[in-house]
Amino acid sequence: MRKPRDYDSELKALDEKARMLKERRLRQLGELVVATGADSLRVEQLAGVLLAAVEANDAATKEGWRKRGAVFFQGSRKARGRAGRDARSASANHGDAQSTQRQDRA
Image (cartoon, rainbow, N blue to C red):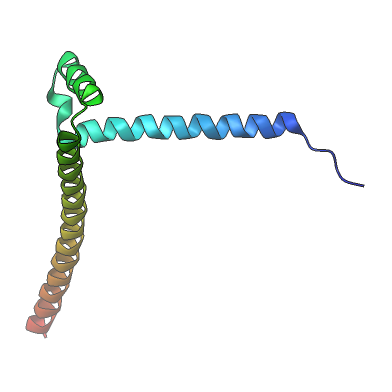
C-alpha cells in the first residue's frame, strides 16, 4: 500500500522555495544596480530610465542595450579573472622573493 502524500507540507516547501527565489532575484537586481553605478542616480531618475526601457518598442535600441549589457558582463568576468591571476602571480612573486632571501642568508 502506498504512503499517502502530505500535500500541505509539499505546498509549504514550494512556497518557501518560491520566496527564496524571489528574494535572491531582488538581491541580484540590487547588486546589478550597484555594479553598473546606477546607485549614484536619484531614485526618480533610475525609475524613469527603467520605465523608458520597459516602454521602448524599438527592437534595434533593445538589441543595442542587450549587446552593451553582454559586454558589461564579459568585462566583469575578465576583470575578476585578471584579479585572480594578479593575486596568484603576486603570491608567486612573493614566494620567489622569500626563497631568494633564504638563499642570501645561507
